[in-house]
Length: 212
Image (cartoon, rainbow, N blue to C red; front, side, top):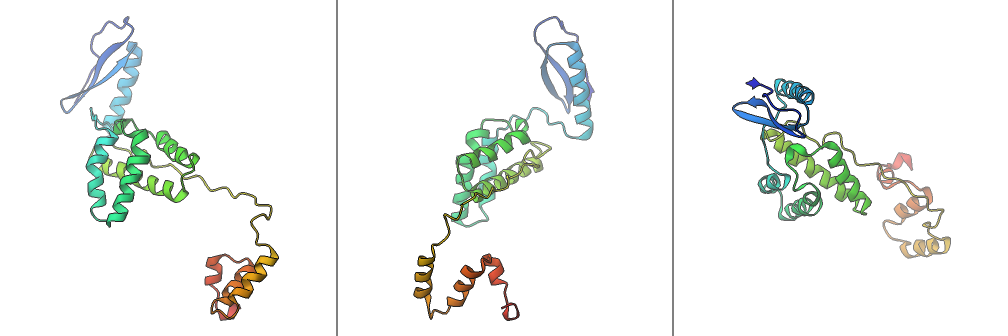
């Protein structure tokens, strides 16, 4: 491995400098001053020593998705495979598809998640999209295209509960009609308990005879 700052005329507006040679490949950066070149060189050296320097990998997200997706969907049923394909085609590639894998940042992945929520996509849909983003970039790390998964650290914002001011409550007269309609049904006690107690479904299902 060789590191170098070539002799250049740093008075020009932009100098394209070969800064680092790794395994026979040149890492190139366009820099304006020799001082900036030395700073970037030091950063590249540190990355290389940590094993996090990727050299000239121009694979785009779209190219990698086309290779990765068939493998990801081969072990799932056709309906799930179709959903995965739609998530990638409709929600990931329009924003990230043209970017090289190494250029995608955590902020850009978070922006995709936030934009989908802002568009009114269901949280389950956005969560599934994020899961596929994690899988896609994890596989890219395993193949050596990148060293860090940019989706790590992204979050699905907590859902905000909206105030209903009681407008969604069932009026007493309708509740009376409902109780009359289910009278004698095997699930009548279950529904009476649900409306009378306000217990959530999981809480109701967790009740036993001693609790009632």
